[in-house]
Length: 604
Image 1 (cartoon, rainbow, N blue to C red):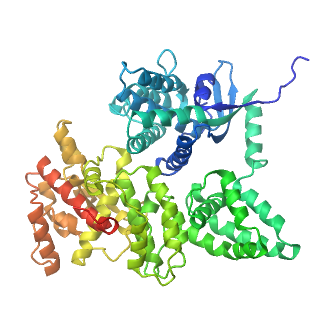
Image 2: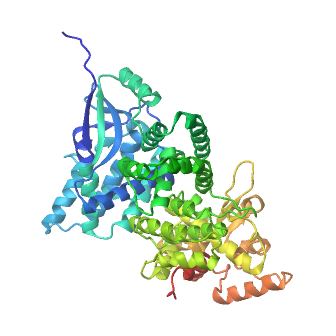
Image 3: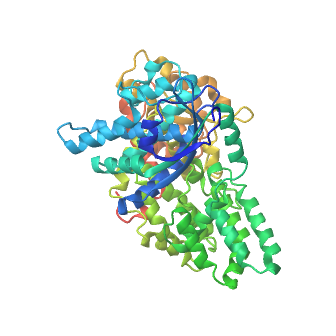
């Protein structure tokens, strides 16, 4: 019969097949902008793919399901994306990064390298050299095409960027930095590319027209979604309890769900995440996927006594989980997990859950936070850091409630938690190479300045040293004053964009913290005209840029004198040499502040 509607065509596609066969793949004009956060959604995807890659290296038959996408083929034979734009765009950018990294080490005389490069290249580029993903109505096609041809270089040729364009570039930079830090050579990039292209699957649902597709999309998001591990665990658990305990367990499960829902990060606001991190914490092993999680929990819940214990722990554990994801504030109002919250980390959560019984719980949180900072700044491989977490959980869980700080530290060090060769030198290099012009470096720059400033203020007992680190991290908002990262030498004074000018404007040594409400109008002055602003600053690191006010308290004055011996800066003749000296000084004080020596015995 003619005119009969066919049911949707659904098939499982590898990433490689998806981009090659669903072509041209287009983001239609009615779609919302690409908006995945580089530090949240993208970081979480990279974590998941990193965990999968570790499994793939052991067994290359492993595969990873990344959900369903919905497409409609329009009159121009283009495949319009109805659902899945954010995932597709992020995967495409990841493939661009891998292609460009392989190109940078490409040797055409090596057949293995030629094949590896061609495999990724044909996924992101058609035969005419055009990108396979197009977003013409979000101004995204030009950005993707530029990234294909030029990578991150010469972005300025695109002119003034829209918000979606800027976000595409930010995501590219974050993924590129992740690849650089985690895939160290050609073999790593080749193997990771193979895993992504051939062992990551998406279910592609092709529907006849847009109205039908949107109707299906709405129904799928309203009901009938596949059960996650948490749902399956709940079903199993409720099937095991006697009728007399059913209402009690129902109430406790609801209370747990409500607590988990208070997590501020969308990616962690799920019972699925909660039971996963709890399982890693209690098992002391790495668990991935629904099957492994359910296997673990079923063994833990075989008897009535085990089920009762689990039910009675639900609320307490979910409160700890929620507080951990949101940063945990101590009774003295000093934030404990500042860095993990600021960088949207999640790998640390099992360790916090494992140490919930400790009297010195806040000290453990502080150790975890500082270790997370080292992970970020020593450019440690994500897989390496994550692989240490289960052992750390075992060591911490085995401690007595009354364990001293020294015992907690010793248990931490016994897990060989920091095995990075030359960690000191790596962090120095990481901090001194931070570049304000790279959007992916902005948060790291602010964290370095905040930690260093608070540390120096603590030495002199001045400024806001007794306040949470968030005081130093707080940016300007419409209703509240905040703290600006001030460029000592404003870019408005540069006559040319030279390498030296970039250094004295963009490096960490060229920046400091100032109160925006008091000094915003002065931040555009030349360095020599900022003497009074810097002298009046409440922060030691900023004060050290200017002449010392002899009315300062003795402790403040002595510290400033020592600092100016180490960094003899002149605002009147601000130069690349001063910036370099100051960058290294800040990096060294940053390392002191995070207590690197506590984690490893042999540092400089």
